[in-house]
Length: 123
Image (tube, rainbow, N blue to C red; front, side):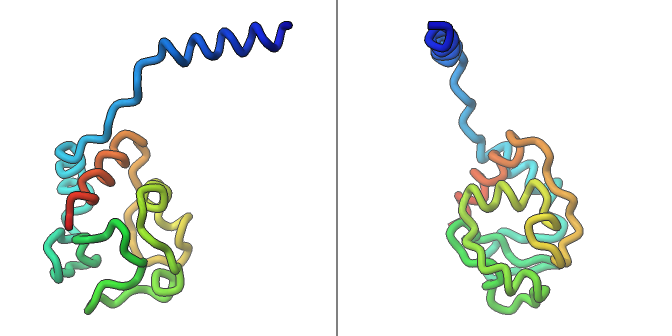
């Protein structure tokens, strides 16, 4: 009976909780410009210090034509979907040890979601 009461309280709390805010691609664009834009372009075929992020969602890691990837990135064999990008953007060096990307990551889950929503618009 006690377990049922606990479950009922949890269910009620979940029902009353506000829905999670939807990711905001416009906010993500601003975050991208300040935290990623110095090294990554968003135009197709335009590589900077890092590879172009155009079309990244759904793309295989280490696959941008004309960009010289580290051995670690070439061997990663990832597909950049929302979950993979979220993990990577949290701490790139933890996800791909040996990467030459010096970015420490985005600690805010909301900011990561916004950046990923923005990246998904780059098609």
